[in-house]
Each structure stands twice: as structure tokens, then as C-alpha cells.
View 1 (cartoon, rainbow over the protein chains, first blue to last red):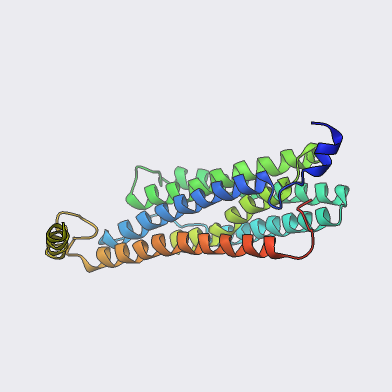
View 2: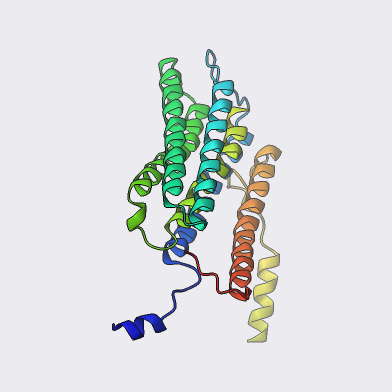
Length: 188
Length: 70
């Protein structure tokens, strides 16, 4: 395509990464809703729903972890703001901070899980354990993928196409936004 | 044809709930309540998401400035 034709073709108002990520996030919202629905129905139908004996869920550690995840979302929001101001260095810096805090969140979750498994709470030990690991594990997997993607794009940001940061923001805000719902349902 | 439509409506109105289903037909009120609540959420949330998307796209395309995503 020659230069004249290229300049005559305007880019679309909504970039391809945003459209693709929007469709993906739509399906992921339904995925989490399905898991939450199954959890609520199972919990309602289980006569004695309780945390297994001898297990204490680390609520305060997880509250602190939740704060770290929100902090990660804050840094990503800042990255978007700096991107609008076309400040590439700060955009990359904020993206890296968001990724690091996301990875810390996943790391602390992993450590909690190791403790719980050592105390005997596994997917097979009880219905509560199965639901816990399924819901929190699904979220953890999304958080891990999202944090790794943030870290990757923080390093290659100059080479990314238009709309990448907005696509990243859509996904990460889903991860950050759904966590309080899961935390409230499962831990309390 | 109209008789078939009328008969179909009568047949549908005479159907009973599926008592074999452990969630929607189960006698336990807690389970049925949870099922109805989650069915409501699973119905409303996609509609809200689609509505939000339509609102956002209209807002974006109706804006007067030529502000493409950078």
C-alpha cells in the first residue's frame, strides 16, 4: 500500500487489542460467575458447611495481599495516565511496579497454599477445600498470567501496537476487581 | 397452524418443575434459593455488560474530538 493510500486510511477508534481483550474478558467474567454460582449452590446444599477442623484461613495476611493487589491496579492506572501524556519512561516504570506487586500477590498466595496443604487442606480433603482451590486457584492463574504479561510488555513497550496498554488494563482490572468478591465469598 | 400454536402454549403451561434436579427441583429451600439467585446474576450481568459496552461505544463514536486511542 503506498503512502498516499496509507494516510487516507484512518485507524479505527477502538483498537484491535482492546476489542480482542474485551471479548476475552467478557468470557472470563462468565467463567468466574459460573464458578461463583456453583460455589453458592454447593454451599447452600451442604448441611454443615464449615472450614475443616484444625485449619485457620489466613484472613489478615490475605487482607494485606488484597491491598498489594489494589496497589498494583493503582500503578497500572498511573501507567495509563503517563501513556496518555506520552511519557514512555514513566509508563514502563509504572507497568513494572504493577507487575512486581502482582507477582508478590501471587507469591504470597502460593505460600499460603503450601501452608494449608501442609495442614491437610487439599482439593480432595473436603468440599470446602475443593471449592477453595478451584475458585482461588482460577483467580491465581489469571493473576499470574496477567502479571507476567505486564512484566513482558513493560520491557517491550516501544514495539507494541496501539491500544496494548488499554488491553492490559482491561484484563488486570478484571483480576483486581473480581478478587474482593472471591475473597469475601470464600474466606468469610 | 393456529391450533398447533395454541396446543403448544397449553402444553408448556401444564409442565411441572423438574423434581429430579438436585438444584432447581430439590426440596431444600436453601439450594433452590441459591439457584434462583445465581440464575438471576448469570442473566443480568451479561445484559449489563452488553449494555455498558453499547453505551461506551456510542460515547466514543459520538465524541466530537478526533481522539483516537494512542
